[in-house]
Length: 496
Ligand SMILES: Cc1cc2nc3c(=O)[nH]c(=O)nc-3n(C[C@H](O)[C@H](O)[C@H](O)COP(=O)(O)OP(=O)(O)OC[C@H]3O[C@@H](n4cnc5c(N)ncnc54)[C@H](O)[C@@H]3O)c2cc1C
Image 1 (cartoon, rainbow, N blue to C red):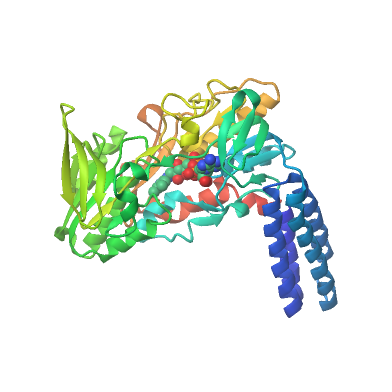
Image 2: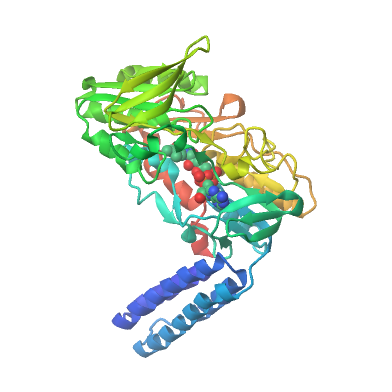
């Protein structure tokens, strides 16, 4: 609400066209908005105070024509609000308890917090998230393929959360579920009635010897790093011939199709430039096949053959020497015998090994594999009834995708509200996940499936194995829109 009032203030101020004064008020209103959000991350009391003050300020500039003198008065008031907000966090006592506490503010955490807020306007919700940037990670594939920008895939976390959500800008470090308590890196503890755990997964770059030193140079790139994703496109764009390697580590990883999606985009770029025959393109996969769902794996084999790509299964990247442009793989043959093979490359796209975050692995919330131990269909923790989990950090055997998160959020929201109302939790998640496989720079095979590899297309009349232009438009325009304005959802905030 505070956000929309501030926006209203800005709009009215601009309409008044009192050039210098208006510009200052606008700048100060935005500053006040930012400060309000920063404050909200620390102390709920200060947020409420600030929101009320901003609301009052906004109402004062509601008149259609704001005279220059009024604007000056307004300026002073906005300054007062700013001063108030800036001064409150340090002096207020630290918050120690929230009815709902969310760990992680990525796709799952933000969507979870805002959806719960929509369903229950009075529930106090706090979210622990250390990062100020929020990335639309599904866009990384097409950034690497030169068809999208990092700018479009990045927003400020503060702009995505409803102003009433308390953003605790810190890392969660330890869990004491018996005491309903989470301890932060700062040492502060926060207790909760209900906990939602969704800190994503961990990219284990260090498990490939030499990788960290060379990533982002020497033709070594990865769409899995926001810092280096643009370098993938630089590599693809700059090559006229040579050996290109695309690696896939052991499962599970987020977006299992991503390691090969970028390979098709590169191959198509080479083809469009008329130089595809000058390349030796190799897919080096630690796993045994093209894709976990056989229905789509067969169709992908045709795509592979069409580009003339060589596949090497059972090939796990273990070492890179960037300067020498050599990559070493541990190769497991059909009898389980292991050996090492070193390949030269001109470009290598690396998908890093992935695992549950260390602080989850070492916590009482983890299953044997280190993931948050969840019921596959209710998403409730298997040991602690007031804890839920979702997203990439969860133990559920679905494809780790934002598409899965979209279907998981309503189940967790509903089950928390049911517990609050003394009702039993209900099953609701069927394991849906989706992977828009970018088979060229203008086609996508839209793989959608649920638990057990059951194919569950959203448009059953269209064969999902077909490479379609319409899904490419979806990938570039439709799905990002859905993410920012429907799933997270930001749009409804403006309507508050
Ligand atoms: C290259 C690539 C391509 C992809 N393509 C697709 C696609 O086409 N379709 C699709 O649906 N999905 C795709 N995905 C996967 C999708 O982005 C993830 O599955 C989704 O973001 C998972 O959401 P999450 O909230 O679980 O994790 P994330 O979105 O990764 O968020 C986790 C959050 O937790 C925070 N966090 C970490 N540690 C802590 C801590 N200690 N305390 C508090 N917070 C913490 C992080 O800062 C982060 O903000 C792709 C991913 C990549 C990398």
